[in-house]
Image (cartoon, rainbow, N blue to C red; front, top):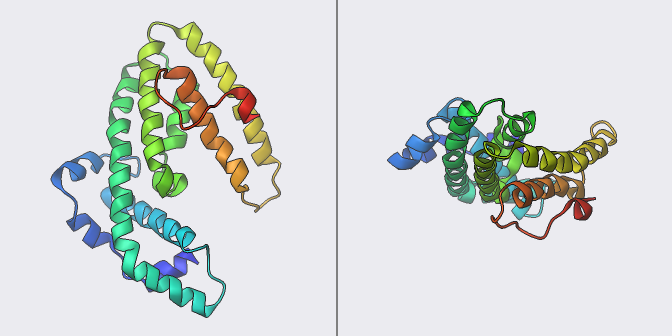
Length: 218
């Protein structure tokens, strides 16, 4: 449905790029997508998913499709710009984390895995419009973790083991889903609970969205 709606709606890509201020353009020039066009395309996809969800979900008849076409025509450009601004906030955190990682001696594999999970290709689409501010916060917490890792690797390893318990259980739940079946919303939420757990362990006294622990996640 999203693909058909985007095909039926004039792309806001050029409009969005023209509307970028110099600071934002500089921030997003280096990004995990590799180029501005790909990043804007990712933001358009994310904005489309957000508009469909906000309108009540995918349509299943011609009337519903026309209704969503109207929503896209009116809001896709503005929503894409909002998503791109949120992605800029993510990249403002991503750049110093990348630099710190390059300077870190023998970084734990868990750090590289978390960074790849948060900021891999299609970061906006995978996180969703409402989660991008959280992704920026998780990257801030990762920066705090790497600063502390230089002086206390033993504590970092202890907390990493705690995260691994729920991370492994979560992956097992995903693997148990039938082929082609998307995770239910409650299972998807566990991914973000694990990120909140990382904040609570590695980046105190940063605040979490809600109280979280290994036991609560389980």
